[in-house]
Amino acid sequence: MIKLRQLDPISDVIALQSVLEAAPQYALNILGHPQEAGAAADVFAALPLEFPKTNKYVFGIHHGESLIGCIDLLRGFPTPNSAHIGLLLIKESAQGRGFGQAAFQKVEELVRTWSEIRTLRLGVVETNRVVLGFWLKQGFNLTEKAVPYEHKTVHSRVLILEKTI
Ligand SMILES: CC(C)(COP(=O)(O)OP(=O)(O)OC[C@H]1O[C@@H](n2cnc3c(N)ncnc32)[C@H](O)[C@@H]1OP(=O)(O)O)[C@@H](O)C(=O)NCCC(=O)NCCS
Image 1 (spheres, helix red, strand yellow):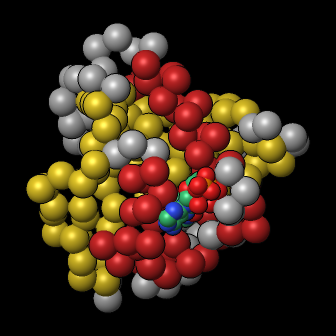
Image 2 (cartoon, rainbow, N blue to C red):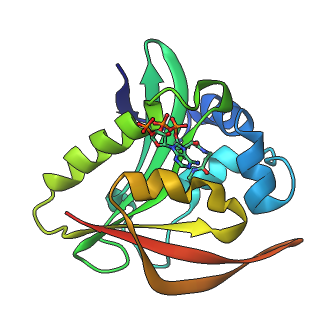
């Protein structure tokens, strides 16, 4: 039904930008404004301090020939035994049709082949808490951890969810 393919920071940046712009409600929820022109380049570039580039993956979610979404994944963050989903996004016109769940299942399958990884983890900005139900359905649990989140006019918290795999 869908396929994941690793995206290239140069040849796929325009396509990724279009997908990000095609999910405007997400941008409003977490940024308080539409995506900026460099959003896709930022997805490729974003890396925790001193984190090896080779352990970061940006996948496109393809339905047939169309790019309908993306996933950003870090292997070995924030601990060597965790993998962190930075973003799973499906463009709005394709939401609610099972693609997000199918993409997550493919990511989980991949992460299960990484023998050192015991925990999948992600953060949900509270102003985007509408997606919490999706993650709970995928087997994640809310943890006690939450970190402050500030972006321009958005003052919120990032709720941390985890799933043992
Ligand atoms: C969250 C997101 C990835 C879900 O993808 P999707 O393709 O719309 O979701 P699916 O159709 O695969 O839904 C799978 C299941 O989760 C449920 N679900 C989806 N969104 C939900 C929500 N917001 N609240 C509760 N349940 C939800 C669906 O009802 C479905 O359940 P069912 O199988 O019982 O019908 C998508 O809405 C999205 O890209 N949102 C914008 C970006 C974003 O916020 N990403 C998360 C950042 S942490």
